[in-house]
Image (cartoon, rainbow, N blue to C red; front, side, top):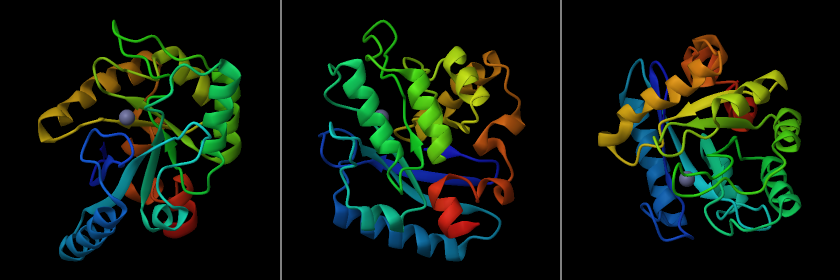
Amino acid sequence: MIVNYLDVAMADHSATHGFGNDVSPDALKRQIELVRSVNEQLDGIEVLVGTETNILPDGSPDYDDELLEQLDWVVGSVHTSFGMSSAEMTKRIVTAMEHPWIDCIGHLTGRKIEKRKPYELDVRAVFEAAARTGTMVEINSAPDRRDLHDVHARAAASLGVTIIINTDAHGVSTQHNSIWGIATARRAGFEAKDIANALPWKDFKGLGKHGAAQRA
Ligand SMILES: [Zn+2]
């Protein structure tokens, strides 16, 4: 879930991995309709409907392109096959960045503090691809992820990549995890103006591939 000043985006896990809510394509279509109808009833707040889609080993997402197009916001994340070589993993993520509807890459290096090392990856090549394709990268706020870390986040921004802070909340009780993402962003030297979802809606809505194509 990402939280903007007046806006919120709901993005459950996709269905191929067996964790989270395992939202099937049909369930996601119903969610799109639900959020659209909620939006019509709300004034002064925009609710976005999105997903965290798995990036498969070949770099493709695990939903069809036509379904991804209908969403407002798509995070692509690696949740499987962590043991690829650096060249393979870099190609996988760059391929995902070249996808027309993946707006953002989630928890880029996959590290879990004290549990799992980051996977092998040419981070600079990935950031260059992010800048070239207009794909954002997130600072993930989960306390054991905090990925991007501050040095990577700074490096990405210096190459022209747009940074976003994602709560990675899996429910209301973990939304406050955003304090850890904000702390990481501050360590990287960012101010609110440097973070996509700290911008006013009028500035945020043109960002990302969906923003550029559908909302700007
Ligand atoms: Zn994830």
